[in-house]
Image (cartoon, rainbow, N blue to C red; front, side, top):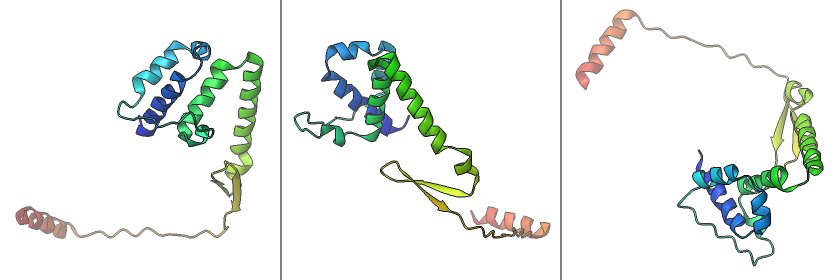
Length: 149
């Protein structure tokens, strides 16, 4: 597993340590065990909860994990369905057939907005040239390399 996710797991557990115990009890124990088993043991989180903008200073992966916890464990079933529905709509727009197959290139910006660029319709033909040596040159080079080592 990538180190950035391990650090995000450690940071999430650090935040959950300072969260109200009633909320933490709503989170499934298997999920908490997964976070605990896969966290980075060397990463030390430096979140300052006295700062009013501490949410902006956490890792993006940690933010995603906290969103997942919120969606799956902390909200009412009605709100969960709304969140899942809006997520599915965003994904269907993001990965629509038109965007994928109409020769448009999607670029994700830092604000998670998409900018579409028309690709040029010019097609370039690239030819593959195979250069083959005669068999006796290959054998000669093989022995030359063998004795030079």
